[in-house]
Amino acid sequence: MFLQQIINGLTVGGVYALIALGYTLVYGILELINFAHGEIYMIGAYLGIIFIGIFTAVGLTQYSLFLSLFLTFIMSVLVCSAYGFTVEKLAYKPLRNAPRLNPLISAIGVSIFLQNYVMLTQGATDKVFPHVLPVTIIEFYNVTMTTLQLFIIIVSLLLMAGLHLFIMKTKTGKAMRATAQDKVMASLLGINIDRIISVTFVIGSGLAAVAGLMVAMYYGLVNYSIGYIAGIKAFTAAVLGGIGSIPGAMIGGLVLGLIESLGAGYLSSEYKDAYAFIVLIVILLIKPTGLLGKTEGGRS
Amino acid sequence: MILEVRDLTKIFGGLKAIEEVSFKVKQGIILSVIGPNGAGKTTLFNCLTGVLSSTRGRVLFEGADATNKRAHEITAKGVARTFQNIRVFGSMTVLENVMIGQHLRSKEGLFTAILGTDTFRKEEDEIRSKALEYLEFAGIQDYADTLAENLPYGDQKRLEIARALATEPKLLLLDEPAAGMNPQETWELMELIKRIREWGKTVIIIEHDMKVVMGISDRIIVLDHGVKIAEGTPDEIRNNPYVIEAYLGKEEVG
Image (cartoon, rainbow over the protein chains, first blue to last red):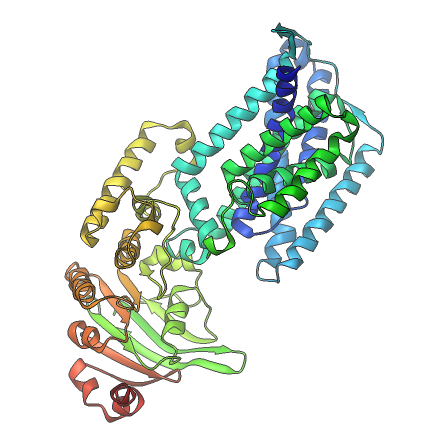
């Protein structure tokens, strides 16, 4: 039972972590809570259904399931990244020097716009992710785990490790860290801040696309409003880990997933969604900077 | 002329922070900008480096227009600067700080980085060894792997100079480099700045410490209330009545 809940928790936790990274990356650089981020995740889920539908229609899925899934992931990531890039250019960049509340309001506006845009184009009813995946169940020590759960856990961990390496080792990653600490100084060292901000949105949106697609495969149902609750939970995860901290978002996501599934398993699954917010309230009361967060005085 | 400033003016609201300031800087010299607090010295630096855009006037760098370009573009042309307050990237190592400056001059692309190709590794190694050279030049090579925030104050200031040099500037702007330093550190800093000049780079410094100013400057310009009131060699400035009235006079009383 315990191990079973751990597996379930890691599955949703990995997804939360991927979305939370998008919040924390953007917050780290712009000190903006990108409320439209959950909608990018939701669009990623829809794009999964659309692209797998296209690949099935042209016969690719029947030819090679692996190839068509792979291409579905790639296409969803590319299109979501384009959404993230465009949202930043249109809704946040013009407000770069405005008071901090203005981009926040703009973000809420983008969120409402994207939800309604998807509702109008895709319909208000649930969409079903086509049953293309064979369900294989792995059993060990009285624990059952589907191959899809294993896939979600592995993909989440790989992407997190990849992002960590990218941030720590590459030129662009270092430039992102420098920009997060001091934008003016970074630009005086030759870093194009606009480019770094765009890269941040593209990466965050790409991760959200993967998360959305995996959730669509996991639950099988997608709705235009799923970005709201997932977005708020991932935001909670980011705050839990310490907003602005990349390892914090990863740990926060996984911890939140575990709390939810252990709570659902041992207490009551009725209040599954409430656990996340109880955690948020407790964190805000006890350690507002989160598990790995810096204190306010730490940033200049 | 490496730098030419023509009638540069910056107005904040109704306040003229600098007003029609003009001067020329010859390649390879140390120029000091002095003046009482609020004279507009840092505003001048901000306008020259793209941190602020000027209201009127022109800036020519090596004869080409560099007025109100964005900061990273000006850095790419070969201008680097430090700030009055410490602005190291605290949660990065000393070496990483300098590598950031060096990155501008490397061609490493995102693609090669992700694929981890040989070109990427070679480039990274080159950047690393060059960055170490700059640390050595500034005398802080022993701290390469220390987090920048853990360095003592004087060494953080040296790190800022090393990091600015890593962008391979032709013109280096230092804003009060000796502020908060003890006499020993100040003396070492003056030696460092002289070595930067010997390297063929042009240096403009804002400084309050008259020993530093008179000791290393080839030329001095004096600002007061945003207006250039004097320009000349250290001897000429020392004997200029306007300067004594506006600046040195107050110093003596204090």
